[in-house]
Image 1 (cartoon, rainbow, N blue to C red):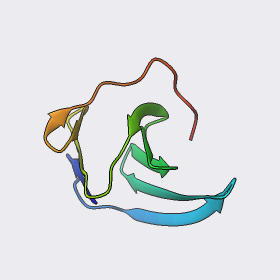
Image 2: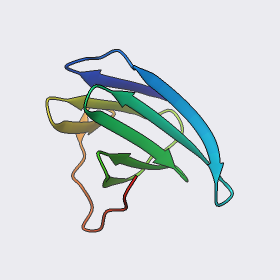
Image 3: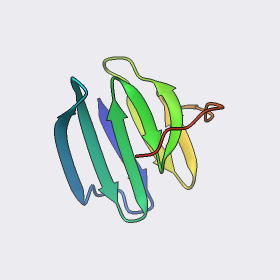
Length: 80
């Protein structure tokens, strides 16, 4: 999986830990906060749905792209 954030495409911090039996990954880049838990993508507390192994995630100027296709937020969101 690759993660790219623009503007500010350098990942400032990256952490992983266990929560409720799942590995959680967090990436912070400036004001952008990305979380992947149980293969589900959250950007700034908004649920963008499941990811698949090998997916490319791009956060570019407020748009979320998975494998270069825009992904819209889901109706329900979980907090980071």
